[in-house]
Length: 332
Length: 196
Image (cartoon, rainbow over all chains, first blue to last red; front, side, top):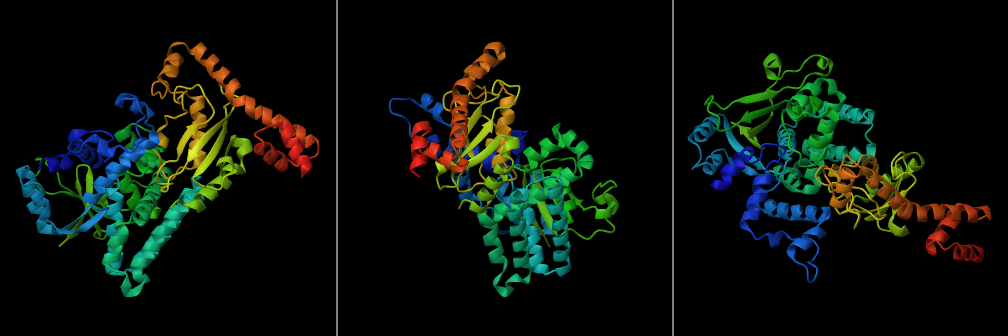
């Protein structure tokens, strides 16, 4: 159970800049196995000892070692998991804090199921991807598909205007539109939930969609840098450009409010984030709705749900946030 | 599988304005593999690297552009963030700050910027870094010496040979490939060009 607590409170371990999921899981993996199991670098030279070998290790060796650790992790949790009963969460915290136990109980009154995503730093984007595509698959909402496609055209234009070379992002955009068309009646009955899950677990589809969403997010933040600058300065003391380069564009960079607001705004998709943590200030399970600002309102301020809740539809993308990680939630 | 279409587009894009940027990328030794490339950057003006042409070995993995390109200086260079032993580079975008939004060209531009702005407090080569911090004059002089010794000799030589052979009336592309084939020997290249 120690493992789950670490997973649940990764911020205790490293408050800053850790890649979500990666640090606790990777460290645990290293604790449990001899380090040689991850050694994929150059074979030790004859007559040298370990310390000297270390000097031979270079970036690609480190990257390969990280890949090896990730591969071990991959066997534990797929990129997107199966639908589970919401109370499966409780099992994780049997010996955990009673506050969390009772919060999970509260959660189960409103939400029936949970779908886990891998803690590889991309969990917010991955959760959004699956949840959105599954909604289109279930609803077959043609007007939503038309709407998001026109938003995507705007996002593409924004990136072009910002000076991004087209070949760096076009493949990612194409692949997402392809997935969208597949879930929207594209292949008739042959495309169902199983196929969506299979593709979401396949890195060659899933990672492309994640990268598409990262492009959309970075484009939105840069396009409206005046709006985002104070937020970014407040949380990271870096410029908009630095923030995008380090916290949005690299795969595995974890997401927070700024990225959520930007993605929701850029694609015009409302997102509900339900917060579950060990805080005792209130024994409720709070949520926050990220409601996109309409295109023509974008010059005005966007302060989330409070002001717009009346005219906004219920978000159909709902994510469960535990410090450092996002999973997908299903309402009853 | 490597995204071959993207790599090809990158090569074209990068070499389009190489006269302005001072940056180019080609297949490694005129090979046919898109996995192994050679980049060239010109040393930035007003630095000890000015006038040098630095070759960088580039290896792409199957999962490029999701994984960063592996880059290493082939030309010896005296710089705190580049190993004076093997050319290994300490630069965040070649590690965890890599993004598929970056390209070979932007990575090489970053290397060029790194030459302009050494970061001795985050070193790859501790000896160079120490010198850079404690004895900057010697550092600059050593870096300049290494540039002249390793980054200028071959390139300047080659350009002179190319010019000479072109003045004899041979087209540039033939001159260059002939020189390449004989590893820069001017007389052998001339013989090759004459024999057809």
